[in-house]
Amino acid sequence: MTSLLCALLLAPSRPLMKDFIGLNTHTVQFKADLYAPATRLIRNYHPLDWDTGPDPATKPKYPMTTNGVNWMELYGKWRDAGYTNLASVMFESLKPSQWKDVSREGEAYGEAFARYFGPSGLNRLLEAAEIGNEPSEYSDAQYRTMFEAMARGFRKGDPKLKIATCAVAVGKADKYSKDVSILEGLEPLIDVLNVHTYSFAELWPTWRRSFPEDPSIRYLKQVQEIIDWRNRRAPGRQVWVTEFGYDSSTKPAPTTGDFSKWVGSTDLEQARYIVRSYLTFSAMDVDRAYLYWFNDEDKPQLHAASGLTRNYQPKPSFHAVSHLLKSLGDYRFEKALVQDPGGAYAFQYVGAKGRIVVAWSATGSGRSIEAILPIRGQVSRAEAMPTSSALPVPVRTSAVQAGKVRVTLSESPTYLWLK
View 1 (cartoon, rainbow, N blue to C red):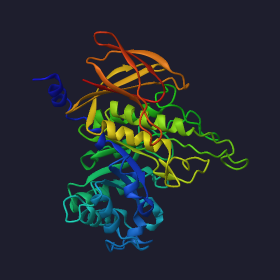
View 2 (cartoon, rainbow, N blue to C red; view 1 turned 135 degrees about the vertical axis):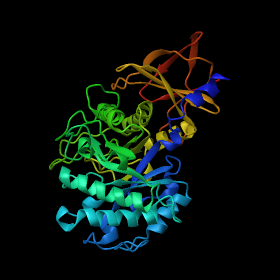
View 3 (cartoon, helix red, strand yellow; view 1 turned 90 degrees about the vertical axis):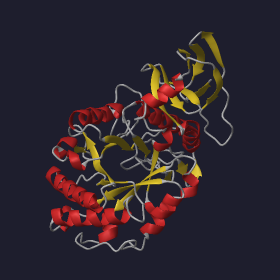
View 4 (spheres, rainbow, N blue to C red; view 1 turned 180 degrees about the vertical axis):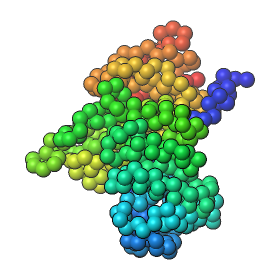
């Protein structure tokens, strides 16, 4: 048996990168054809009150929403274009006081939702649904009640619909995530643990973000804590990072107001850090990662410049992520060759056609470094991450000795095809 076949057999739990690289969007604003080069996985914010109006006891009249959106047309178009769809069911679009009987109304809504949208039915519009996004206005007790009710409804309506939590963390990370411990005892109703993480080096007033591998921030640690909790309390469940990202605007921060001291990333930094985030998450025990956001209008403020496109025109990050998907889509993470905080990173991916190594300088300083990578096999091709529609720039490598390759690494990942 060849070493390549052995590797493919020994790593079945690792997803192919085309089943890993996801993108957040919102209903009618999404242009399915435009974003096809960058992802095949879509996470949509699905306001519950679009289905019920202000009274959650109202039975939805699918496929139409109360404000005139046709879910069959919307999700069906994405499905037919080859996307796999996840809905974040935002019950927090209603206030807690609007629910008269959460247990009854939540379960009834969940059952109707799953029957219509689930993968077992005729429509097959959704693979999975989250119970809430960031329900900060709901107490822990209220969220637990809601989760249990809606999850039981989902199970009744379509047992094959994957059930994901809202954004969770170990402990009280911030007002946007629920402490995962409040769901203890409900593990049979959980298929996916959902994490939101942003690489903040500072919070208000700058909201400055750092590079993904920065050991001084909680970016990766917050995800690993959920992985560890899952391993202890809910083995077999998946962990999805459903929000991460970087703001990059061409405009300066406003001179007054809440964002007058906001600090964004450059377009190049955004492209680098997004791709490196996908790669770093893939090396963890994470099953999927969704980028926030798909499009922006170049506003210099928190979460308002996070798009892969700017006014639907590709940013450098769009080209970088599209290249990532094209290069690694049919490959899965195999192993870390080098993982040196403040130095070189190199991850190896394996697929039916061979192996690809992706390496970069994880210094956060923008500087290039000389690295000797422990690579078995010859490098048949090497190129730098592109940031435009132009062809990727070739990168020179040299063999030092058997099993070692010298290459100059920048903060933009370098892809090396092996033979």
